[in-house]
Image (tube, rainbow, N blue to C red; front, side):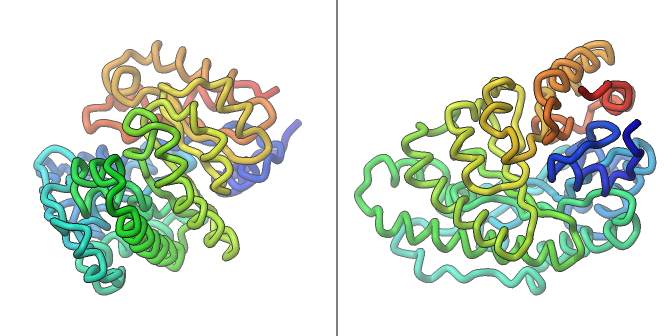
Length: 348
């Protein structure tokens, strides 16, 4: 009989491909946490480190999931770099106006100090509080916001940056921007680890096949994520890496970034990504957060979780969870169904 582990032990053993009592569960539930404080207007909540931490802790006490992703969305680093951000009443903040109007302005950009930036310091506070309160009982990932390609899209503006790489007129400046974004992402990741987080994580969804070709990914996104992965690994830091959409065509590249965790969503082919990641990286996901978790029935949640467990858990290296952030309307009973399915599932 396999020994029973707590969430930290269970997750660390999963990352090391060691036997576990059951598959760990991640919720990626930062957009649900305001409701645990009775907050209906998210705008101020996502600027308040103490509130964000309290929401995460209360949600953990309710559901008992193994892995916590502590974050406030996709625009924190962008705002710190001068991007205008809109704080929405009922959802996460989003980047609005770019920080630069021309690639000629890249050299004037400055890497923000996470400890001095008003928002980043609140997010670090959130991670620190969660770690201090429950870090011995739950595996805490301090999200380092966006990877280099995604951050470049926000700083330059999505349409502008995609046009920059398509026209190939100023590739030296494109790569200068990506190098800058790599420094920004790494600095913030290190700050998250300095708060005591067990791991850090990057989202780089605009670089996925749903947005750009695999060839463009390999030229403009992969080298910088690999640099991040290598630099953090040298420091003994566990890195997770997320791309929304069908990541199947680039899964081998994602694994080769040396990320310890690859976050995949429902569009990726489960058997293909398992084959690519086996023994190299732990997969996290891939249950549809909207159609299944938010709008489906508990029975549908069980069906999709069992499918993922059957395809992705053999040989270890799998954390069950939604493929992306859970919408605020996700019912508690569907989250309970996910967690209970993981507890019941018999590992091979």
